[in-house]
Image (cartoon, rainbow, N blue to C red):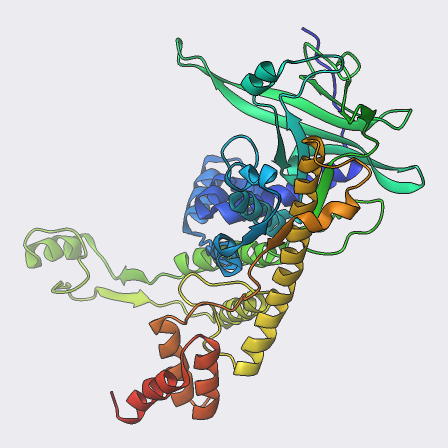
Length: 484
């Protein structure tokens, strides 16, 4: 068996560690802790391998706290976009895509939400239109054979990290994608032995020297890219001269390049990981300033007297209901170390404000309670503007992909894509307001009003921004006035 190296784009290796960090953080603290040194370095710069150092790191990592803000924020943003309320208009021949967009049972709303999920995390998502089970070049099928083969157009999607290499070229005077190489992985189960193995396959989409689109598949071991067959795609008997692909982002793309930036969650993840590392240091400091008991003035005779005076016990018992009788000349006490943790406390508070300003949603309290209505409004507007752009780009990309599917189904010519974009309309909801404040958040507003952080009028505005009606807000705050 021959194994060959598979080339990747220079940007791929640069961004892969950052992509994995965001993915892991959004999966949750369990996976962050499994990452070990990747996300939490050893606290010692000198000894990291001795048994004592390994035991120290085990306790250090165990006590570190990871706040589930990335996952909570992702869920909150996806919930705000309300994909299930999306509306679709398209020719009846393509309506099957609404229920089964990828030929594997994924509904169109589910595929759009998956794309948004990936874009929020890593910056972009790739969509590909293909003609599933289409006849090969020169193959002629009867109507019955075509029906049995279930030939149909579909939309496939690929996450950012599966795109290994890419290139742009000017073709027919237009700067466009000319080459894409994806890594597809799957796990195969041997039902007889019960064993599993991971299978890798590479999928290439490219424009050849004559300007015609083709695709290849190879495994990099038994077959190489040089050996793999080129499968040309034709529409109406003519070669397709562009890749039926859309790269979806939450921002405008620069011509001729894919964005290196990650998604809206990436800066939040950076702050949360910094908070995670600082919490480990903080917990270790707390551990080493525990009170320490001490005794002095012991003699052998005093030791014997101590046992006689304390019912035969030779242990110094402490805590509730403990009673110690000490021989003459013996002293005992407790050292209470004192040090200021103000630096840590200030850091955690500042870090929380920075995460909230970036749009982070806290698991129990989204941080809006202590902010003025203006501050909450500004921060919501920043998030809403990103979600607005994302919704626009998702609509445009999926509309275009569905038109590509119509082209493969013979509904219009390959050169008539732009003229038929109005045949497909996808309407995503645009109301991204946050959901109604929880009782705990409402309590935080009351507490802040009592503390004088803002007045009653401002408290009413904050509650209204949080989904509470004016009359309900007045009632909530009146309970405070009545001493409830």
